[in-house]
Length: 126
Image (cartoon, rainbow, N blue to C red; front, side, top):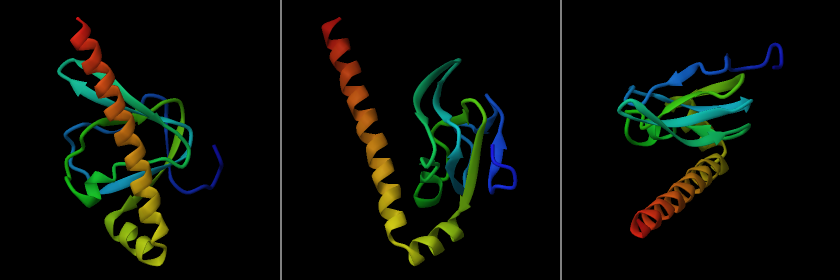
């Protein structure tokens, strides 16, 4: 990890936020990786792993304030926190930021849709 860099360093396995928590910011992975987990009762289902330059938690500032998944560091990770006011100011200064956020969300939605279709197809075979 870079000394003096912005953001906070999370240790391997450290929780960034939990499913059901109230949120008011998004995060950008500056270094390392995080895993996104859906908690289903006493089971955990890994939804994805996010890496450098990926963002997550956007729904907390553009829609629902309730976190839909748990995110924790997968190895050591440095994350930058962006609050709603800063996010909106930066989008005003550079609208391409909004496009990149939507592109990332779209990519994740497509991957989840593909996985859902795969699981439904498997269920139909059983």
